[in-house]
Length: 503
Image (cartoon, rainbow, N blue to C red; front, top):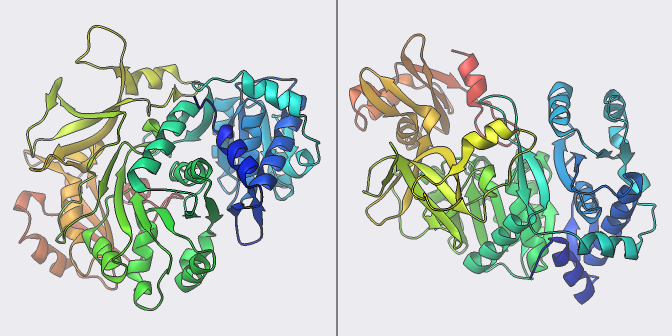
C-alpha cells in the first residue's frame, strides 16, 4: 500500500538512478540526483525544526526546477510544502504567511532581499545551504515510516478573487489517487516527457509533478517568457522531446492567436490536456487541424478536489459556439448536480456541481469556518458522515449524459426579469472570428451587461449584429469594451476582478 509520494521517487531512483527526472533551461537532474538533494534538504530541515512534523514549510518559487527540490525536501522532513510565487506583492505574501504561521520559509540566494523583508519570521533558510547537509538515512527512514497517507502533502492558496486567499490543504492519499487515475485513463508511462507550463503555486502543476514521479517520466519546466516567443517554445519542446502537456487554456490560445502551428510544430506530442477556463471550440479545432494525432482531453475541477474530477477525451467534431463537455467523473470520484436540495438528472437542467470521494482536499488551512461552508455533509446521506465539496460551479448534462460546465454560480445574474448565465454570452461571442478572447461582467449599479473583448480592431456593431442572431435580446450586452489585450492573472486566466474595477 502506497502511503507517501516519496515512495515513487525512491522506487524509480533505485531502478535507474541516471534517467533524467527534472529539467529546465539551465540544468537537468537525474532521479538519483533529485533523491539525494531532496534527502539533504529533508535532513537539514528536520534538524533545524527539532524533528517537528506535520507543519507548513513555505517555499519561495520561481520558474526553475529548484523549488521542486525544496518541495520534496519538506516532505522528507515529515512536513508539507506551500508554494509562494516570489514575484507576488509583499503584502499578499505576508497575508499568506499570517494564515500559515510556517515552521520555516525556504528561498534561494536570489531571494535574500525578499527574505530580509519578512523579518517577523525567524526560521528562514537558503536552499543552497540546506543542500550542503549530508543526508541521515536512519532519520529519514524513521520519519517516512511514521507518516500516513492522510497526512498533508501541500497547500496551495486560491486566487482570492472572491475574498481573502484560502490555503487548500491536500493529502498524500488524494494525490496518489489522482496520479493513479491519470495513468489509467491517459496511458501515462515511463516514456512520457511532461512540459510544465503552470506556475508551481497553481494546482495544474501538481499533475505534471506527480505524473512524472508516479510513472518514472521526465518533466521540463518551460519559462514563461517562451510563450511570448512561441517559435522558441516549439524549438524547446522538440529539443526536450516533450510528449505531454497539461496546460491552461490561455497557453493554447496564445499559439492559436499567433498561428504558430502553421509555421512550426511540436514533433513528439501525444497528450494535449487543458483546464482552468472554458476551451473555445475555435482554438481546439485549430490545434486538432494542425496536430490531429495527439489525444486531446478537457479536464475539469477546482483546487479543492485535487485538480480534476472529470475528463472528456475529445472525439468527433464541434462547431464554434458549442460548449465542450467536461465529460464524466474519474473512477473513485462521485459527481452530481444539486439544485434546491434535489439532485438534477434531466438533460439541460442547471445544478451546482458537487463532488465526493478521495479527491477531496482536507479543507482550508487554519480556516475552519470556510472549510465548513464548502465541505459539508452529503444531503442525500443521513446515515453516516460523508463529505462533499460544493464547487459553486453550474453545470448540466447533455443528451449523451456528459457533464457540461456552464459558468460560475457567481456569474449567474437576474437581468430584465430573466435569469442569465454570463458564460453563455461569452461562448457565443468567442465563436465570432473577430473575437480572440472575451469576458462578461455585470454592472449591478447600472444593470448593464458589459462584454470586454480582445481582437485586432474594435468591431462593436459587428459583434452585436452577430450575437443578435444567436441570443435573445435580453441577453445582448448593453455595453462593449474593446481591449487590444485583456488582463490576465498570474495563472493565465482572464482577470475578471480587474475588469470589474473598470465599470
